[in-house]
Length: 135
Image (tube, rainbow, N blue to C red; front, side, top):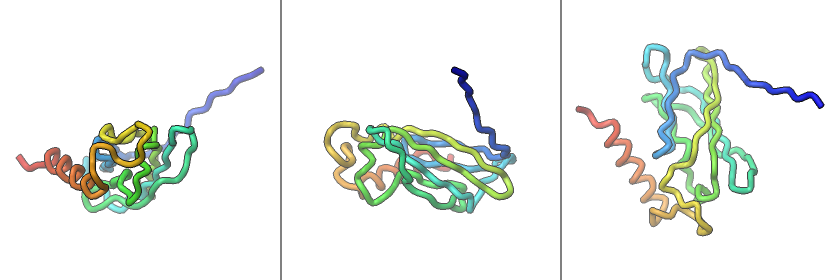
């Protein structure tokens, strides 16, 4: 039996970084300038190995898109994210990411370290501020 392996190659000039702690993707051009209005589509794989659409949208003025935050408590069952980043001028690429480490992987549903989704959003804002604080 013959086996073939394939690897996708996407021609692009995007600089993409992912901050898994807060579930955010940052998109820059080759000159490290933030790219706004870049399309981002996110899929999730759960513990049963089922892949499904999770969220999509566009980067903001800072070139950022939060791919994790939704008004649901389904994060505890997600094991992996696959993220398509696509721009008409700069090309496209696919990245993978783990869910934020502060999310429960146990049998309970919802966000374990936070009392509610609002608390999770507050924690994400605080982490973002500490990382992006002007020096």
